[in-house]
Image 1 (tube, rainbow, N blue to C red):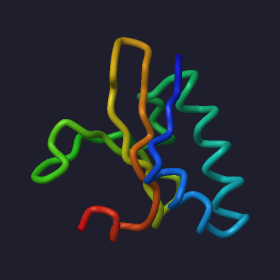
Image 2: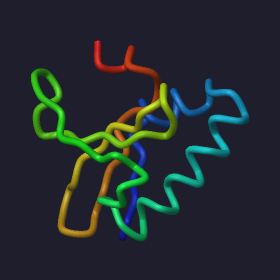
Image 3: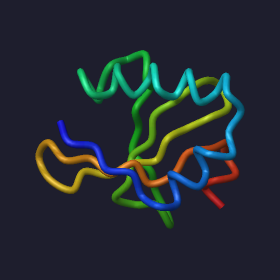
Image 4: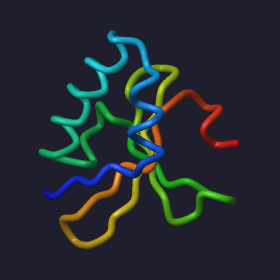
Amino acid sequence: MELYYSPKFIKSFRKLSTDIKILAEKKEKIFVKNPRDPRLRTHKLHGDFAGFLAFSVNKNYRIIFDFLGENIVRFYDIGTHEIYK
């Protein structure tokens, strides 16, 4: 699987605490093996984010992503539920 990181994702990631960054990296490894792993709680988004999906880093943080191809994924943003606004 090829992963790409949008400039928005990179900017948001840099602002996170070290603990959340480490957890996000662990979840990314799970994601690469299986984007539908139940531990990620992957789900489709609606409204302004129709066409995107998200998975949980923890109870409060999510990563928004989309598929650019069969095995090509772009991480669009990371953060709390505020990223949906």
